[in-house]
Length: 337
Image (cartoon, rainbow, N blue to C red; front, top):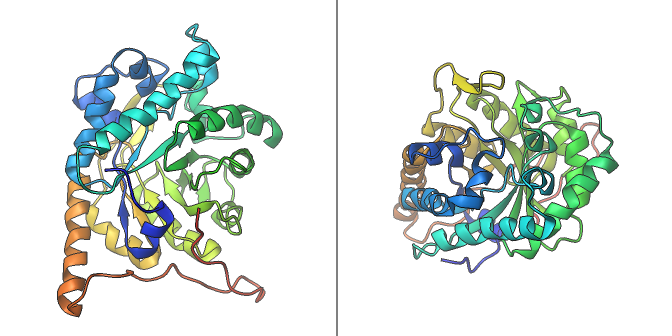
């Protein structure tokens, strides 16, 4: 069902559940994602698989569907001989497919158009390193046309996700100016730093005073790294935090394979919430099963609050507000789109 409220309003009332990894669900459905366009290739010739994957997450209880456009760019499609008009149509189709899948339930479903990093277009693992040798202005010129095309397709929000460094975050935040949509900014991190090695305090600080940014946080990272990052994001920005880590397995870009064991535990959501998370879910290798478990945990929390209070569940608690170093004052509150 199309939402009646802005995403920011929903985040102010309770924790909102994201979907999980789109690529792993598509692979579970038998799709071949070995192409350099990854899941975006299916927009060309198997779009029914994308809608089916979105529907799987709707059935699991997800409230926000992230579109299949992470690796969809004008430049990537151009390498296939696809012109800009047709590419823009494919961007719009990614939004339409998610919206149609959300119509399969009477719950509010928000659609967030994925805006992946520059490195995703290169298809060589660069998004996990950042520092591409481009200036902020050059990165902004790359991102702005796609953002404008996605905004014209009418999603409820833009997901600026898997951002590896502060240069690209700065470029993205400039590129979304005037797009008319709320956005969330989500870094991919390693330990307590961005993939490019910058401090998370400085990285999250870029979004602290921006009203269009309704949540800030991390995705596509180890769950343990997400635990630490959530608190930092809340303390630095005073905004709701978004968190959707990987399974804990590691991606080998050269072998194009996942290695190691899974460490994602849906029960981590309790710690995330306590630290300020309000938009939670999973990224790579997190399928409908863990998302359904997250949905059960969140529903149990809402039911418990209602039973204890005798009235409908309200806000689960405000994002943390702390003084900036040097006593500069309170950070801002939740922003409206």
